[in-house]
Image 1 (tube, rainbow, N blue to C red):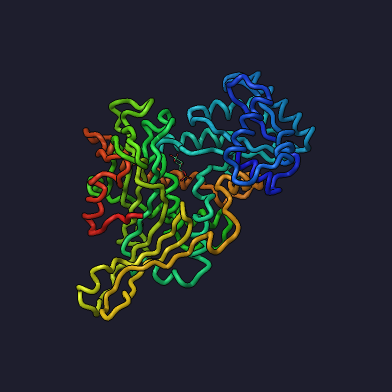
Image 2: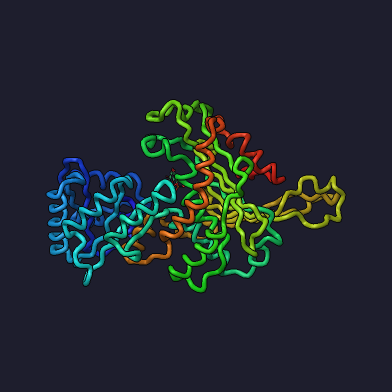
Length: 470
Ligand code: BG6
């Protein structure tokens, strides 16, 4: 809702835009409008302006009903027809299914049965689906079969909101608009790649969704594998959706977790601990979590990409709740210089060179390298060269959902993963999930507010590497 308002505020929505809610609650239009209003006031990125809100408000409707009610879907149809007439929306509709995947089939067949999507000849109909896209390869395929009963592939927009983030798109700019980075972007210079998405929050009120799903399904299968694809893919011939997807698909098809899963994966579950000066509950004590739950809140995997550019370079992906801080970053860690013509004592504080793309917060890019410490010795220590968005640009970045919702309305697909990418994500992850399921033990505990279980550090130590402390 805030993203829709921000788009309106930036003048990017047509004046006739309408927003129709459909849910079980017995609400009138104005009840729904109030919820939207409050969400917008509290969370919109741009300033609240009464005149923009008034215009949006004119197009807000609400249809109460359950998914099994034909009568409710008929009312939805009438409401859409009235809006089309009154506001000149010409029958163009985007259906945003913010519902559990188990209801997809029912809702899609209702849309179909009640002819809500129209003939599609002079109008467009699109469907927006939020992750999770299934919980394994088989269920993802089933989901896709259901969706494709009514919508053709170009009409389906799968939201992976990481692709809508400015900093994620900037990874493409960095790689393909510059000559500087390409020479070392390969196995000759890169030792390993770390992709981290750490959150300081716990699961909040989301136990119903999260318990049984876990960190790997929630985040690695989609956001982190998409980041991997963008870092590792070859240059697309253009930024047209099909070209971009072709390159992402090729790299995901070459990616796999090495089959010794005990050595190359780690999972954990947060226990009670201190965070931000407060003692917080462990995962098993969270409301709605089953007391013997084996759901992981920390997941780390090693992914190898079997192609000429990346053979032998491990990509380490990790995500977790209740880390010391919120940070998402992609770091290319380079090999050591082949020879150091300095006494070892003078290079003791020299680490590995690294290029770090900070997705959030403190959006920007850092290059780390060794420099001489001023003085009479040849002492060398790591320093950073920083690009910070705020230092170079005056515009603030739009929220991911602004960009993605606008792209749905424009029918612009490059930032939306296609089904094949979703399938490949599950093909990479399914064997790991099956392995974890087969273990008789709980995930390794880690205290809330720490960087995860010892097993995650050991996983990298086996390769002679260590996790960065972002
Ligand atoms: C969602 C996950 O996709 O991303 C959540 O389901 C997670 O568990 C969220 O908290 C994080 O998004 P962001 O944009 O705050 O990094």
